[in-house]
Length: 191
Image (cartoon, rainbow, N blue to C red):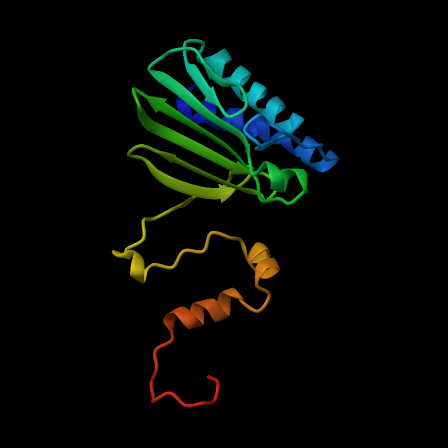
């Protein structure tokens, strides 16, 4: 099994476990560093480690919950539930993330957002993709042609989250505001 197929398999298994916890609800505790953790975080990381190490017994792991295990040129980096606060509130904006580094170079990454039904992945030299979760018809992602940050627009929230924070701002009004070009002299009346 190639590494990308293995990563998909591990993430899919982990997503099924995570969804069971998500639907049932979980209690949150705090780690020593003050960040939240749940039973689901630990169970998902254990499953990821188990699935990956069964196929690649010589590989090392670096996980958010259990730290580093093993020494190897191949290192799997695991974030079992990115967005634990969202997860514990049953907000679907959480992810399962894994990456593989070989000799310090990231070769692949897979992100699943099973509660939102989305997934993303990328491989070095192979591009980046998005699809529904579980995966079907992938859509190739492209790098923006915008050359400078002052001309870029970045929205790092889904529409529902943005609406909760700023109910008056909608994607249509934000887009119009970003692209509006005055055609006459300003007046005191609203546009």
